[in-house]
Length: 316
Image 1 (spheres, rainbow, N blue to C red):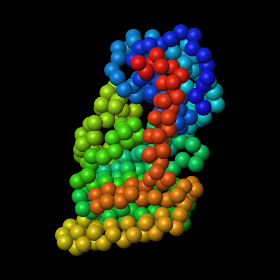
Image 2 (image 1 turned 90 degrees about the vertical axis):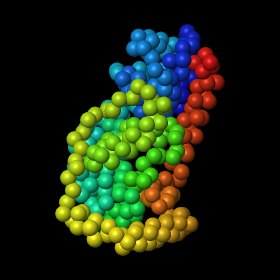
Image 3 (image 1 turned 60 degrees about the vertical axis):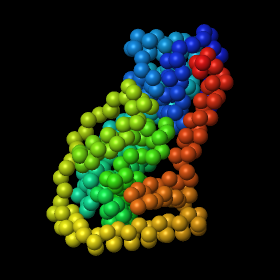
Image 4 (image 1 turned 180 degrees about the horizontal axis):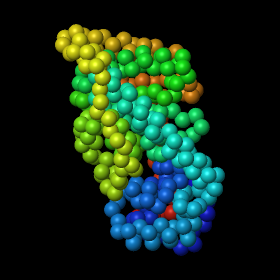
């Protein structure tokens, strides 16, 4: 819940609005931000002096709250403790996730792998999954996805399925993300590439529209990117490179789509209790349980409306 703290002195700068927007988005996830992170997520350029003075004034006016180096819309120390613990867990898990991502790159037709989800934002709870964004060769997405998910079935036997959550696939013909909103912009800029340097580079170039949302953003960390394939990958791609591959990719696309439509009709739920949903087309596949993306965008707009009503001087 956004704090009802009274204003002691007005903040009228456009910078105040941009700071509130950055905090409002991450408030959805109960995640306070550091000063550097707030600046990275600003939606307007600003001089360091203007940013720092505005941030300090907003804390003084109790528009926002600070614990140690973190800022939030809510005066709740538990959020700061939770973040610190989550950051510590993430620091231990990210190297493992990088190794898993490099391993996934060895599968047929996989051209790029990135860490997504909360781990890409340097946070992990006690039941953290490894979420991966996968780029495949054009017109081979459904072969690649099927092989990867057949492998994942084996990981259930070993209790390692949470290491292999492959939630979003695109192929090299469909690198540009169509939904240009706060959610997708945040997910793209925080994506951590771990394998397939050329395809990942092409992906970021195809989605340079995110710079309009976050003109000051700089990557969190530079990870070593693997470009090492495997003999099985090369052999399988040789086997399915012609018309046979086209036929099977089309077949698997139709079969998977029918299978997921049936799951949705039956109201099936995933391991987290959310209604299962898979949005599919020939060149992309994404899991979107209970329209998660739409809900986040709606919650963000709702928070902005509350802030604008409460502090209109920041939204002139």
